[in-house]
Length: 138
Image (cartoon, rainbow, N blue to C red; front, side, top):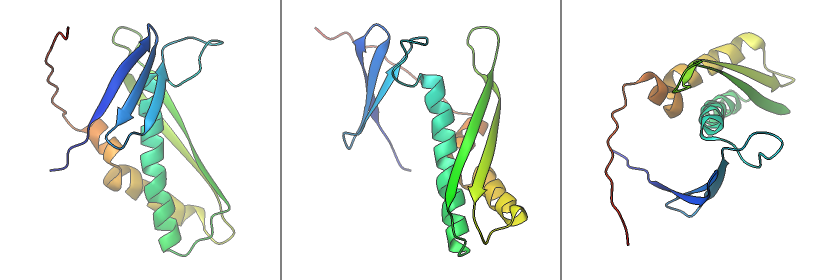
């Protein structure tokens, strides 16, 4: 079993910073436009899914010796109207620019990536248990 840790620290009422064990930082904010300077936690969830699925898809295409001139994924999440406003649907649109790949083989690679290899999509589909504890520091 592999364990990961991040620490999320408040910088201001609507601003936070997440730091992993290696010291990599991600800025988070809950502002509305035009004050928004970072992604919200729900944006980060979509980014994590798109990033995870992208890495696997690109690596599989390169393993098939396909040239990649450009690649990106547009991720759209539909949220519940009430509170909590969780995602009810997520759609990923994968775009590949390649002179020697066809859409059918790319579709198979994307399906494998999203449905089998991506840890983020697997986490979203699974039953994750949550626990918490509270500690007041002086």
